[in-house]
Length: 263
Length: 162
Image (cartoon, rainbow over all chains, first blue to last red):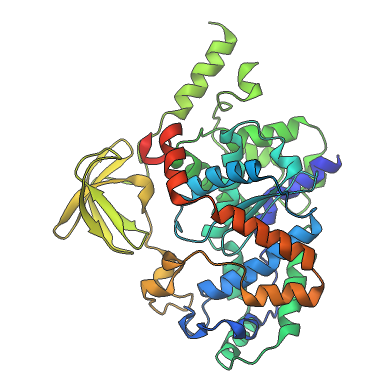
């Protein structure tokens, strides 16, 4: 059940790892970035440098909380080959995409702004083929490319005000830290709303297809999760239940080579 | 039919690249990289016939499987559907609607390590070990170069090599 609970959160994390900035004063925090003037933000927008700073900070928190980064070069290479293949055909192909495996044996996945994508060792071990691995990574990539988290931040009035202060380059690390704290504290409490999760499901499926992976990869992974037991309604208290997500996906067969396809 | 064969056949059918349903002949597509190559034929290794810049609006005049024949003024050629977007790149304008130059978007981002502000965040929070892990993660991720991705795509018949 523990793994199931963690896995159930996995498909929400991409958003929750980035959401809930509240009064996050990012503009001040990036004062050390020498080319702040190049930040593409206009009056309230969030530019690549800001996104990179948010993502890097969240990535550190994720690594800290989920067993660190698995230092296995072969696994790192495989995840990056599959992940970067997908990212190449995403709507943000030139983002600095990076993919890695966390040491935790829980079953989970995360993404953060700027192209950071993580899956736990527990989840990695549940993905027997590149089709299945691609399905999970494509979902996370979609959260980033659709800017689900950044759009939430942009709608936050306090954040807009904070960006106005960015041009003054005055450091306010306390607000920055508070913003990151808000993200990490809410990782498992809140997440994107259901429509954004469905959007990541469908967008990720399409990205996998475009890249040449089997269309049924995500459905296979979700069905495996469901088959492993547990009450999806309980473990998905703030997210769409597994049956609902599966129902919204086309009835694609399990990817060839996956155990389910052979039975 | 043997159930295993049936399942395998279904799986193989599912793996066949679908037509670019989102794109239509007569419709439009947008470039999403700093430079996008248009090819003289609908094959990944066909000669390049033209280069087009970032966020260019292309007119689709023919679709062949996952390949689109497009025009951008005098530039004409084939492009793999995964190399263009249905929608204009979001980074073409800021969230406030202010137009951005391509140089201000991630389309020109070079591989860089952890942002200084993120490193300082880790130092303040006493997360030196996690910072070291993320630096290892970044270095190992960046070690997988575009040439290796290209080889992977060719070997596994992905992307434009399907």
